[in-house]
Amino acid sequence: MTAASATGLLTMFAVDMIDMYFLTLLGEQELAAAVGYAGTLIFFLVSVSIGLQIALGALVARSEGTDRRDLARRYCTSALLFNALVSSVISAFAWFNLQPLLEVLGATGPTLEYAVTYAGILLPNMPILVLGMSMAAGVRAVGDARRSMWATVLGSLVNAALDPLFIFTFGWGLEGAAWASVVARCVVFVVAWWAISSVHKLPCRISLREFIADIRPIMGIAAPAVLTNLATPISNSFVLKTMSQFGDSAVAGAAIMGRITPVAFAGIFALSGAVGPIVGQNAGAGLYDRVRATLAGALAFNALYVLVVWLILGICAEGIVRAFSASDTAAELILFYSYFLAGTFALNGCLFVANASFNNLRHPHWATCFNFGRAVLGTMPAVYFGAQWFGPRGVMAGEAIGSMVFGLAALVGVFVLVRRLERDQGPIAVSPLSDPKIVGLETEREPPV
Image (tube, rainbow, N blue to C red; front, side, top):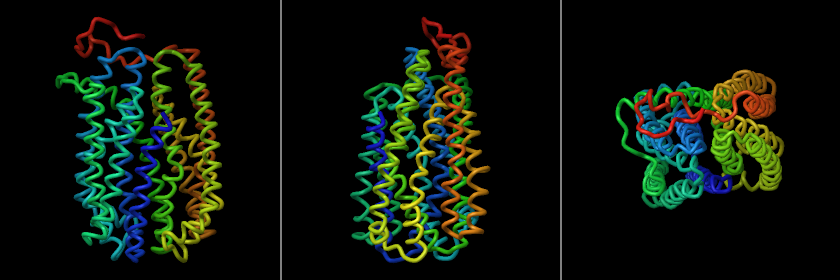
């Protein structure tokens, strides 16, 4: 599950990094800074979509674990419709308020103009991205990580092929990078739809009454999951706003590392996506020994992976600076992160694994508390004082330090929760609303208690 997810995420993040590389070849540092500002705003919307897809994946996985394919199909359909509606409303609001939102993040002058152009092309396409990601989550939830991977891989390959064509051959520059991403998202949507509908046949016809009834269990997971995921872009926005006081070079350095880090740690991002369905299905079947084994294996993989990546980043740090034509503050920040801060991502990995487990153990509010605790009590104070005392390096170090305490606390919390559920609850019920007497679902069997 992790290997397949990591392959898909690695290609996607690698294309984002190549995007940034091509734009730095145009020789304007403002372009890299503009992508940093626009990317932070778009990350808000992507974080909302991740929360929505978590709800879809968790409900489908638990239904599969209790041998209820009928509920899995219905939850999948309702969640896709709900996600499409929510993402359309949010994207429209952001598009009509684009310039003020970017100004709040600290963008000014030519950098602001570039950021408005870039985000203005991407925002109308956000519902397509959200649905593609949601359908891929549904495919992963039934254990088919390979086809979920191919949706991301094919979209990323199309993006990589179109980038140089649109940016250089057609001479579209920054706009070309944005349009290449739009086409790639459409490819992800098509491939994910084929996997979820033609292969697994999850979407089905539902009534308006069933859709309205399903909103409650969807929101029961999606609302805290969205809040959980919003904590990261909120803290990122604070970091970017703080970093902007040190100039476009500092913002460009942070933006470059913001594209390199997901590539380097793609395996950790994929790990949390892989853990969720396994935890959800085994908890649904009451097999808590397997839940603990999954968590232990995931954490061991996390530690080893981060150590290896930290070593590679340290060796390649100077090459990264040269490849992205970084200078001044940007070069200093890239070297500082690669040499000293990359290892702290292991604690981010602990938090990712714990949060995925909380969401699939019907305690998503735990994930919300830990993520907002990291953002508000951890990251923001550390970044503020780091900027006052140590400048842009202090901003980057503060962001890393903010995750340490809460990553360890979440790690302890998830094992405590598993032990408590095993003792008190037994198998996790899918949802009270899955009872056919409540929602009118035609079935011969009652849901398991």
